Length: 165
Image (cartoon, rainbow, N blue to C red):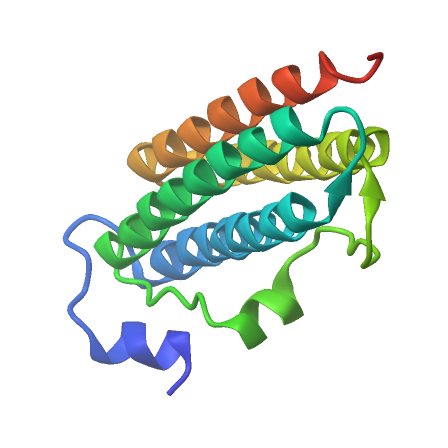
């Protein structure tokens, strides 16, 4: 059963049209996939980082992964609240996330900082587009996306501060 079929068979949202549910749900789903992808990427980098900055980056990545998982849960729960069925399965995330892949193997700490910087910039840019799109339909869902953007931008600031070490 597709997500659209799930919405059609489920209970209608009391204040959102069917079209709005689908539009909001798609934007939330895209954000969910991106956050899950970030969490997976964060664990990959956590296991792969090497160099003088290993310990601090290794520990910071654990904090980021926990944050991205918490944000993913917030986004998925909002999706359900608007009548959209979120999909966090690996296949869906792999097919739909817009974030660029990274190589495998040991990665120097400076390269990990570069990768994180670029992926966070991508995620923030995508989230900002979704904030504008969702705001036309539902301020509560927009607020969820704003929370995601705020967290990602704070993390971006922390990562960028490490670029020149």
